[in-house]
Length: 257
Ligand code: SAH
Image 1 (cartoon, rainbow, N blue to C red):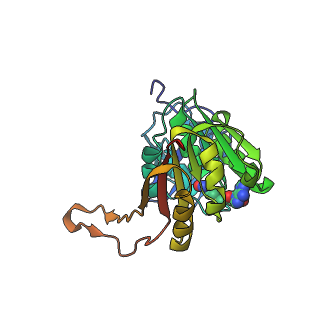
Image 2 (image 1 turned 30 degrees about the vertical axis):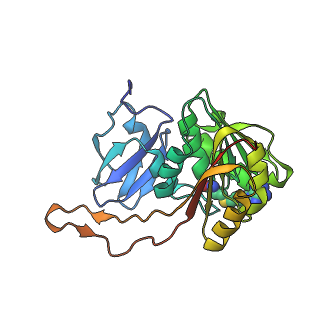
Image 3 (image 1 turned 135 degrees about the horizontal axis):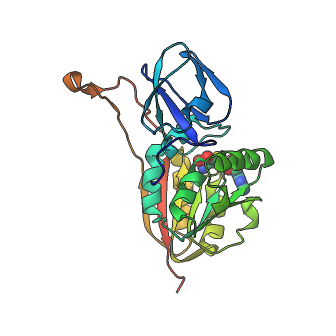
């Protein structure tokens, strides 16, 4: 990170002392919060991490948004893959700099953004989406995060197959089992398939379908994540937790002979 000062057009987090925070793009405008108005242009040139004041004297820090912050606050109109699952999926799909990956359906673009981040500037994500409104939404989210140039979003039903052969495929649609054959055809030998779905019925149908083709290393997972209140002298979990997000299914392509 060479440049550590806020610049015009940067996306920044305004992190207030009461724990509330806002992601804004630095423009020559002001931004209203319950802690007072913030003059965004005054933040230009300030070092990241520094303490600033709103017009009525409330303090906040300026921080760089992480992708996880963007995902939790993103404009979404579909269910998204949760950050706790995204991390493991990226490792299991072994997504890395220079890889080509398929993401279907793209939905709001949460998983797509994480894939685009991992393939780097020399890699490519081919994302499929059958609804134009979701394609537009995902493009707007990815563009905000500076990742759209690594992604091609196709307005296409994956029932019609995929146009590429790629290193990894991530599948997140309701009737997943209908596309296992198309995934097999679109993967390189040894390529990785990752699937998410909320119900065990879907897992069962996907497993039945995976067994029809030469997929090996089948694994089914769910991840249980419990957050703790970060208070040193009273360290204990939060009272409530997200009990279920999705099951994750992984498989690897072997040749048919
Ligand atoms: N993984 C996404 C969420 C996907 S929601 C995220 O993290 O944001 C599922 C998406 O799949 C929806 O947008 C839906 O329109 C799309 N979809 C469902 N069936 C499809 C199909 N047959 N072909 C292409 N897209 C499909």
